Length: 189
Image (cartoon, rainbow, N blue to C red; front, top):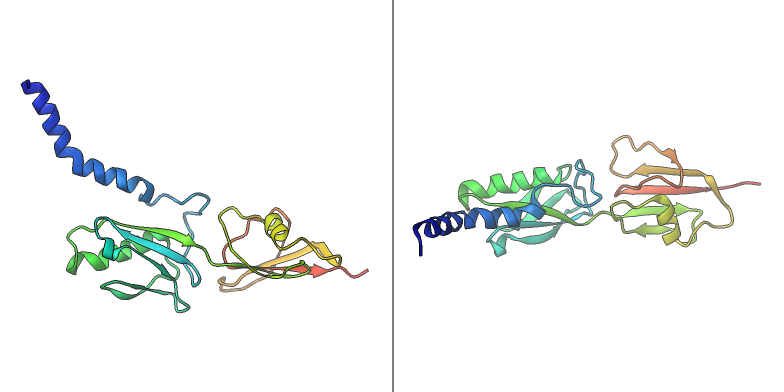
């Protein structure tokens, strides 16, 4: 082999761990998941996956409990309610680094969002799974559509996790958020 070829092979080999880390991090690099707002805050009912590169025992799928915590290996209960994915990644990183790992590479993804609720004049009221980009129109179709008494101009939404809990009127194009409670009022002739 020529000296130039050996030099190129050595340079490539010296970058392989870095390249492997970059390739692994691309889908986990803190970019918003498809359709997910970068400001999405975790709440009870969400299920997240915490992955630590090269540490399968520390890579787990966990629900956010009613108290806003997750139970994580080695660390126990961690308060994540109100945190974004990126803030949760930093929290786990900071807790693992001093005592357990030298330089952990942590990623957090949302596996399942908390539910939305439809009540009032829909054929099948109740909780429904939320998916990013879910419109009110689609959710009402999933609930079997409106009843004969529904007033399609009187649809109200409140989010169960908003501190003020103020009900606001919306139209069929409203983009739902996890935890939304939708009420479809009846029309009176």
